[in-house]
Image 1 (tube, each protein chain N blue to C red):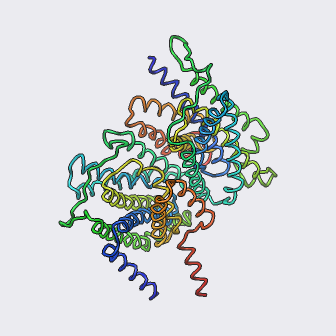
Image 2 (cartoon, rainbow over the protein chains, first blue to last red):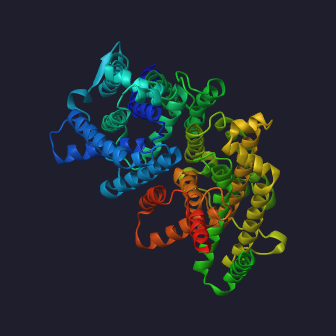
Image 3 (cartoon, rainbow over the protein chains, first blue to last red):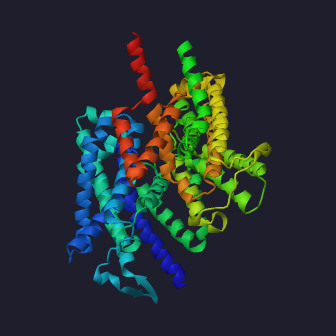
Length: 288
Length: 310
């Protein structure tokens, strides 16, 4: 019983981390029609920046590191969008290849700077001890990650559905030409959304640190999962990213625990099912 | 036109003469170039002629290589049977992946092919009982077709050259055929093609299968060249290198993948002498090509020549 409870919490925590990665990817894709293949690398970059900050400035808490790293990655993402990707506006394939190239550069650059050994990020002390609830042991940090991911989802939901800015972003997702015509500054919103997505990915990388560590190949491990989440949940949908993340988180975690050989195949069954029945994803309104 | 025939004849003769004059290093380098050419040419069917950008083409190369190595080393099957099994299996895999990925087009297609290829990569890493995981499969020996030994670099080079020639000829015939024209039609005007009574989905699906088959051929050449297979062959970097070969050379041209793949392999070999950071260089070349020469070398040079002739 303890096994099932622990694995359930693990899968929820992993799903939460996946949401932090895939929500930004999905937003950027939905608004800008841009498959940002640097997203996994931004997640890893965030984790490494967090690890560096916590080592260079002892006493930096994980939360401070996540905040700083999120800001740093957001600035990086904003510059990337504004000065490089913008030059290829309208050329979807060119943009994908460019983000792919930059992902390779970031990933190799991290290997060069931080070396090949995994760097674990330390858990905040007050969350390091397990919690006992109803006779079961829960790692407190994983509970905190789930709570944070749910908060992030609520925050994004409120931002998109309840604010003026969110209405402008949704207008851009639904019909960019029309949004431009009625005077919405779509160009500035593009950069803003790219920064926002990058920030969540960067901070998510730091929050993933105590669970996954920062290691070379983290980007390659996470990006395909984010792609599957977005294909499953539907492009541009935060609800889709949320539901998809927890589905994939659960399948991945239980798959690794129960059938380690076949975890990857099991992962891709729900994707095939969704593509066959609902090519737009569970919550997507537009074609992928 | 006559000069073009002359160029072709000269380059063909120099390719055949090469193993008799060059050292082993250059012969092996040329073999690697040829294998990459077959791989990029197969991907070009999809990217260039069908207009479907796949980022998961390594799945087919790696799958064929793994079947070949696995059935030969662990089951002890003869090389011919292993090769037939590998190509049949890869074609089947391409049929399945194609059916899934072609539910989408454009960026969705790219993302689905990438995700599917990562699944194969993950399997090769994790299914240790079958693939020996991170240690890879070793102990493969090159076959002896018709009693000829392919163990020396020169002999293997010539065999690879023959197969590359066949592959490029078949692909050239395919592209020029009625089917090839309808394929390019579905790339440029899918709705019009559908209105004309063509089954766009079927045309694309067959292109996907054909591309997968030739990537499998490249995989066989690869595994017999290396006599070793490791999951990293299935990584996104392999797909990306193949795609870079297509884009850098010029997608949708016959010569493009040849030039592009040669460039990538030669760059990779020479760069690795001086620096360890191949992936960073690969990324930088990607950025450079996309920003500076988006339609590739072959169309670029052709445009320059056309300007000079005028």
